[in-house]
Image (tube, rainbow, N blue to C red):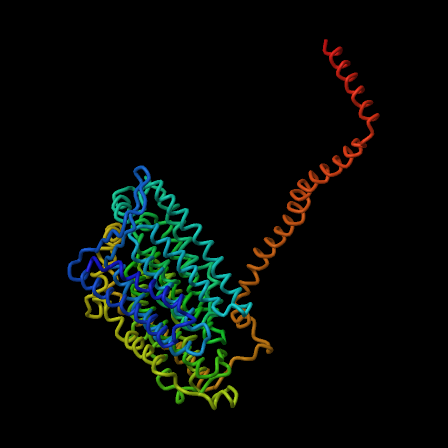
Length: 634
């Protein structure tokens, strides 16, 4: 198996090249087949690698080639497949394939079909590179690559200025985080003399926290994670990323790009464990992000915006788990979130496809009978994300909350309240979309139809995974053995030895689960009474909303605040530099030299009269001046 590992990322790259170069000559059917098939082949190879790691317990190391060697600093272009990266490969290629398959139907009428699939393949290639890399430099290549591809995919319909602005916003905000990431890597090189995980992590585990600036290193790495995984304050790009086609939203927001920050922290777990200060900051920022994004999602009317802020909130949960040392729980939520969030986004795309590209839930309703497969699958996804047992999200979310309870009761309470918010806004979305009477136009109602099999089959597969996916992590308190925890133990063993024991969780975990589920059910029932029984529909944009609802609907004016605090001062500064420094100082100096040269040459030109007598006179004057100078010098 080892000798075929390099094919896992190479196959999507080949798909990118074939579809990119042949986008104007190949048929849509062939483009869709090639784009999907190469990812399916990568999935097959990923399954083989996973089974090898599972059976042997030994990571797979493959050195593709020696990259560069400077003095004692040597870097290999090598791949590492251990328990953590093996699971990530399955998520990226498995869910990625389903999204490719879904895109065949969803994007069939788009003129840039070939270009779209080439971008999707390139995205998968860079994401695979990110998780396969055995060192931070290869990870950074993939890190930057997915940032580039997100720009291309979010701005896919770039002729719309708003969509182009959304792409630029995502690119710029990610660059802010990436600067912190690369500086952190430079600091790792200066401290450990290497970028290879196998060299760094054992050294870090053997050191004392006071010997190495772990806090500085991990805070810089975390800045990169904040940008990529849309945490406060760099979260505003992700909701705007809804400008891209719906399959892009599913790919970016579910299983791949936004979870890269979580993967990086989990991969570097021993470095973060050695810095309790950074861990606390991660937990606080993660919890704050979870709450803040959930509050915004409560009042949104765009179906994709609800899911976007839901993604930000769920990422906050993941970072809360990382911050309290629940590395397995956080990664468990990455897995389950990949299933139900991809399902929800693709389900939303099916709804949008049915109602003639309408995204406003106020103009939907009554779709349950018209879109039965979409409704049932989205109901499963909604139950899963709300933490209702036995769906996947219940197990992963409650593991994070249980670990949080041992760390801080206050954080736990806030986490449970946020879970209630999640249940409310997700069922609000479901009820507004599928229940009641249809509120769109007669033309839209006439064309209501279920999506084609290429779109519904991925929904069904993801729905099944959203049901059974949580059973890989059934806790002992419920009679399980938590297979995932045992499988990932080798990756987190150094951190586990340093973190406080959590054996006391088992005795209280069931009661904590009951509290969380009860809160989710209360929110579910309240949403049902409000939006189904009473038939409440959010007011139109032109109508006035109560104060807190208005704040939530306008996203607490965070974009406006950033605009006022950052963009406008920078614009004013750039205008100052342009008008004063550039035009007056720099251009003034350069242009001044030119003007002096021109004017002086015009003056000297007058001396060239062509009169012989004048030249004799000047020659005599020059001789006299030389004689006077000589006498004065003597």
